[in-house]
Image (tube, rainbow, N blue to C red; front, side, top):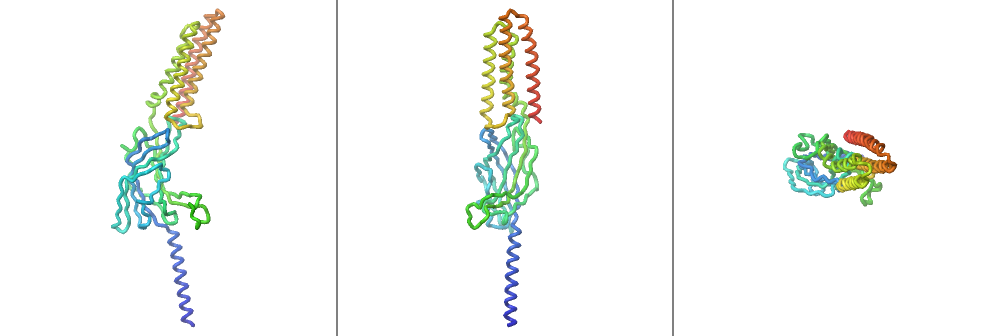
Length: 321
């Protein structure tokens, strides 16, 4: 009887030990040492909200089932292609190295365009193993990008690599998971960039300023020459509108009032004010008040020019902050 009880006790002890060991393994997921080196970021497309990024990716792990060559997931990518891939398992762990090209979707902040500052985001996951089984750990040795060739015409302000947990409020159709909530480990990269857009600004807005100056010239045309004054004003109005449509065609739709909208709206308003001033000058001429009409034109010309330049400088300085 004592031997039977001893055997039962031993079996219970072994079962409890196995359960504890199993729980310990579940509470300590395997780690994946992950590193990344970006070789280029190009084809930044504001209209389509996307850009292309090429990078080398390496991963070190022990669990063969992870198989990143097949299970690599890049959530924000429109599409991605493995240009090169190699796997080495000769040193007691699996070392995977691959060259990846991604077309990434992102949302651009165009409120201050072309003096905009953007954040490019990239995250990596394993599509088959959640955070209970797999945790990313950053390989921080060395640099993560080539500052000479990574991004042309832009300046990288910060390059942050981190790891975290991405939550999905769904069970992905798995009925064995009662609560619709899944968590996956994520390897994340965030790049803050800006550019020196002075030349681009003049390239985009020069036509608008020329349109304003054409309408401004009306103040120096004799007040009774109404055909010339109205002809120049209407022509400058269409030129400013055309310039805005050209810029808008390269930008995504925005529900907010951007710098482009502000400067063009301001220009259209002042062109309208010039037309209104011409009408008033003509009225004075019809009343045989030619001297008063010329005096009004000179005062209006200086006031309009000073206010227009001051408002433009203010909005541009605010956008550059």
